[in-house]
Image (cartoon, rainbow, N blue to C red; front, side, top):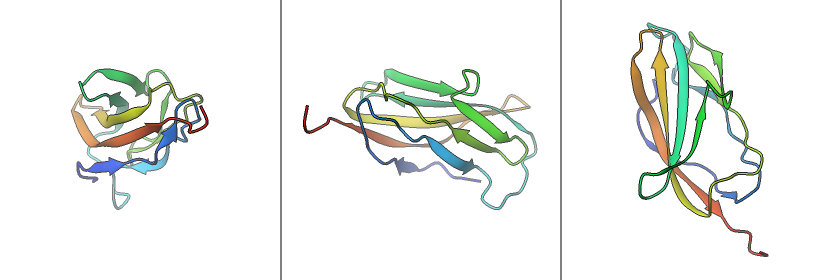
Amino acid sequence: MACKQNIILTPVFYGDTWDGLSNCSFSSNGSAFGSNLTSIRMFFKDYDGVTGLELTTANSNITIDNATAWEFTVNPITNMPLSVGMWFWSIETTDAESVRKTRVFGTLEILDHATR
């Protein structure tokens, strides 16, 4: 299982397509969890803790690829809407037993185009 850690995502330019996260799993060795994964939320917050973007399985921004193995994909975002600056992100999971946990977190920098 992945431990909570600060993961720095590759910066993206404001308005460009963010590639998302593919081939994600919270199982380090492919083993099954006691309860299936039922939902995922990914939050992007600013320094003040204000949510700038929320991605969820409910709104189809995140796809659960294998609920038993806890494998998922955070789908790409066309025209990244977050403003220029540093954003703090976290991924929260909920399983079939309604256990909700923040699993990982980190930062994502949104860059301004130098030619603008």
